[in-house]
Image 1: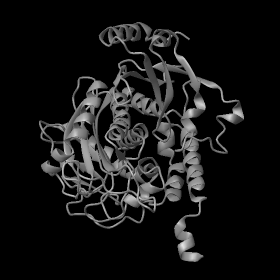
Image 2 (image 1 turned 45 degrees about the vertical axis):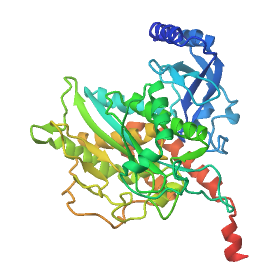
Image 3 (image 1 turned 180 degrees about the horizontal axis):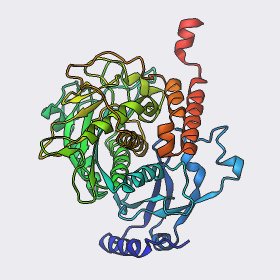
Image 4 (image 1 turned 180 degrees about the vertical axis):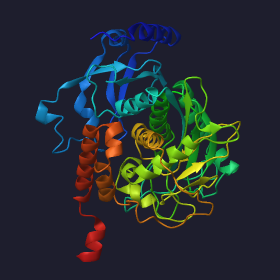
Length: 453
């Protein structure tokens, strides 16, 4: 099948290779349900034919588990003969990565432009939701914020993580939020992360130290291309991990790596503009009712969305309650960081909502897709979010599922999400995450022997 974007891709490839002569290899990458990249390395000369005709990779790669293994009961893989999917290069994604033993070209691939895309590809799900907005002549404008930890590369005698040592003092890092000293002390690895992002055309914003020892946050600028925003966030996660390795340390986006310290969040800022570029959430100096309706939809679908915002067993350790922890309540408010959905102070009428619930281990494509689906559900049905919360929220909401099994049950029962994201995908996703949780639980830990032997 000839890719209709091949002229643009051919020009992009020719210009890139002319500016980066001497490259020998290119990595072609796609993202699975767990949020991990899979792909292959090819001779860079293969890019020209890929631009014209696409390429083949097993479609079952999208539905492997966190360890990259097939799971029983997933009918895509061995049971169906493991057929190839037809992948296409993503225009604008050709770039360099520099953390290996030599620089390499890198490009994203997707099944989205096929007549029959993989309905379980995360990038396709986000595209599908974005198309629902486009049908109404609306376009999301989004920004991601990601927290991550740096750890010692070696674990302790019990196999547990060790707090990273300050590169300049040699002492274990301490938790000092918004400390310019901490950012300065880790500037070598942070600067290399930013440089690697620049090579991949990822625009980064503010850099800050966070509440945990070895914890940092790097923000991204607002993007009017929601797919590209999710692409950049996924690539950023890979970049941080790989650059950390080159410095002899370990980086992680696990939601709750240390019980006694803050978890890693994935905050998302979302506004919507119309065909004229006008923010539909703005009504002069005040918020348009559609912003409140969007929040009403987020609240209505929040229990069903939890399995996307907290997709792993560890994810639910982050929801412990308390002012400084992740929101565990069906709440919204203005300039209130303890609620689930916050309306930040608008600058020049830039009204938006910030979703503060997801963990950094969430798949950026799916976390954004389910958030947008909830907002569209609220706008279409003019859902009332109720009164804003003006005080700090500490307690848990009994209507919010804070265990994986409960969250998946809520997802499976959501007609609103099935309508926008697709019933087939919702059913497969729920089975996929439940099956992985079963595999994870089917393990005897040392604590069981310590307690019960």
